[in-house]
Image (cartoon, rainbow, N blue to C red; front, side):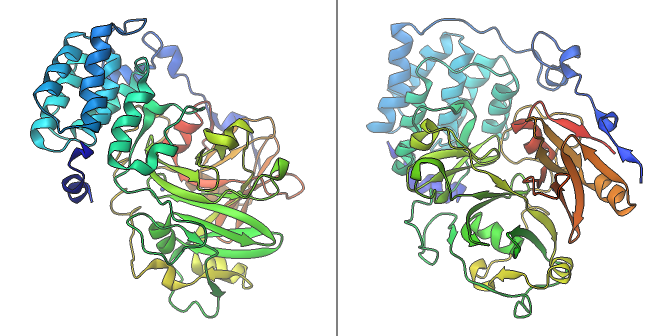
Length: 461
């Protein structure tokens, strides 16, 4: 039905050694009801009972009529409403996942209300009147409601009816498709090195033009930049540009890099995209237009492999089958004045890459918490608390509360955990080992780091 795409798009278009004793233990499981932490049931209530096994033939036909045939043939109508009534009568909460997916693309208030009421009934919650898709999806995620049988088939039909380019992305892999949602933008599927090609998407920058620090007169000293060092070469990626581009494919210090910035997560990251095993062609990273728990989903236009943006792991496609995981490079979040003073040899992206825009999503749109569903959030820190995240040599993720770590380091205190050594760098914080080797740390909001590293340790200072 193409889900009234034109109408839909118009509508939608942060001295002493400090050791592990400084960590807060995550003891939520000890206070849980069933398998859910107590903070989840306190906020979302008790989840409904979940049936086991497959769907009856009658239910399978209803799902096909409501969510697969409808996307191929006609607009939502009487047949789909009747099928939805059958799904509702099943009292199977698993089917609320498919309803939630359709809710994201509902073509009008009547369809939206019908879907919302059915999903709320299946979940046993009061029908929400505002942010309906968000409320339903938050409950599904927080309660960890299982997906129904053959979920990907229905979800793929819904999403590709809106954007056919997603067809190469919605495939089986090491990804939990329940948590994937639409971020409200189109896929960037432009070929490599088309930085200046206009697209109705978030346009990645390939091989961006740079200037010296002296020539970057457009940048104020207080402007936030993401600083990267590779083999003694330094480069600053102004947040103003990264808010527009969200993805850069660059070369620095003789190494190829893919640099995603998730405005929703407050996280700029950098990955080496060269020297991969088996002569794998360099991944060229793009924004898919999709999110997973409010984190951008990036993919490689060369292989159509999807990557976990936060972890750098290929989760679908040829690169997933090769178990490719990209090595991370540290990103320093700091201000331009401090960065250029401590690294005067730095280069910086040129102003034209900002396309004349000057967004500040962090302090405006994203300032009051996640704007897309994330379900439950680890309560040890506020959702938008800035942390420095890094993984130890033994594979244990560690989050350092940035504000407290910054004070401690400026006082000359040491912060060491296993092989991790935190150090000040141009006004920001970087993780290195005992020999000074970069460990690939970056800054992010707490809610994002903790949901992609649910077993993370938390350094409290």
